[in-house]
Length: 237
Image (cartoon, rainbow, N blue to C red):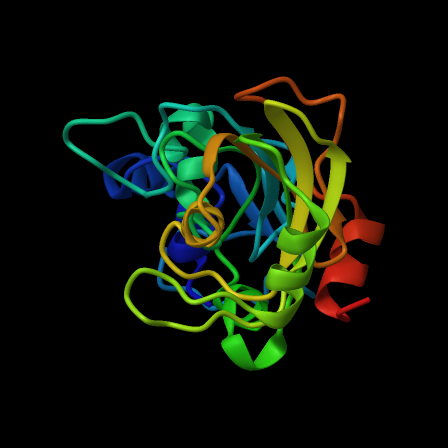
């Protein structure tokens, strides 16, 4: 990797600022000052020091967010606040993106990363990665709905869903449930309940694969994944 690209990836400023940094002799590779940005370095094996501080290179970043309502799952939008807007600017050098989407009015677990391979692994229909939601439903959810979801329901466009696991937490005028599905069709949870004559009034994703929402994260807050969380996610555990 070119030295200037490494420095750019680590947030050391514009090309002009990096040229100035290099010319000053502030960048040292394996004990020797390097002043040319085109110099080749191995970010994982070479020791790169900037202003006396050793660079710990990271290629990928993995962020667990508790997405609030009113924010869209996109990298940019001219009209609405995005989940990327909730991150500090120093994360922008990694160019993270949301893994899948949560509707604007849905909150809860959202993974952001720049690891395209992991994103594909989690979103591929062939992988059947389970996603669990907590929802509040206008209407009494019954055992008949549990069976209907277990068999798969027909959505408004004629699509027949794969089986979903519906758990009733409470059943009254407003029912509280958890639903686990392995697909990610547009507005799927809402449309599944519409198929059985009910309306979702509140929706929150609480898990995706092995990853669960951290209860210590308030809406809009985030943290990087732990090594254990990442290992389990990468290995489909």
